[in-house]
Image (cartoon, rainbow, N blue to C red; front, side, top):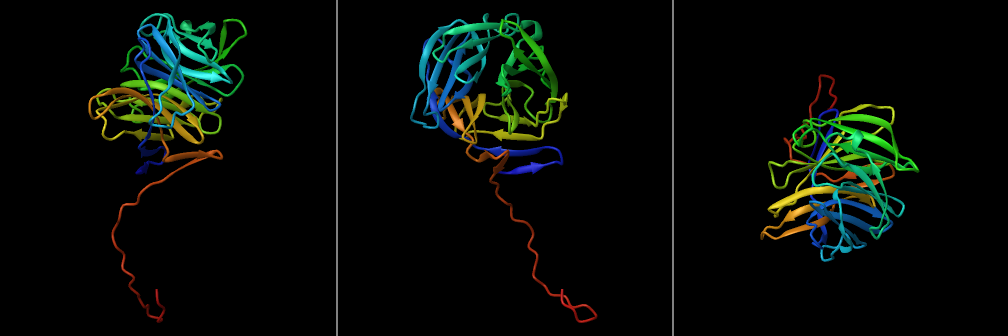
Length: 306
């Protein structure tokens, strides 16, 4: 796992370990969001305006399959988060981005409890949702005017009210060009101890992904990322990350995959090479052999050796 540091940003590369499959159920084919409640991982897959909710406690097992708990949800899903055992899905109730952007509150079996219409804050739609760790607050990643308009990312912190209303309590920018890929932004995740993670793909490639990290502070309005994780899965024809969360000190990912034999499948995976613990993180890296320095002994004019 190589790493480089330019004085501001640490860039490391990591290879994920394959986890459980998220198989097709109903008409939904594209994984769009994951979140974990207790030991159970929840995920949504979407196609057009049809979404399926899945669950699995065995997400690290490559031989396991997530189970569909609700099919036929009438939304275009964009992301998934949670508070306790309640799920919050970022979605549109039309096909495509913008015009109907909302947060859909559901129970863990997919019954819709409430909708929060947030379209007035997101002119072109939104791309990711993450719980802030406080009461009813979420980070929402705004979508630019098109997929290429991602040099600077806009994130808004929303507080959901007891009615169907909300309040914007903070807005900030993240410089993205030169850090994450700007051609496709997929999701965000936030951890109180480890900050904000932004998931990006290079749409010009079938397998290049970057996770951008910022050390979020509520009084800061502009960020340059302090960390970038390059993620590739060797041997697959396509490996595009779609969503991210954390469990047991490791980042958990969901990806659209086309295997080396051409089989299409969505899977969980885990970045085991990076461990988050006690407010910090660690990773293993290999050292490249450098120039040899001989053990020569020099004697100065006073007879001292060095």
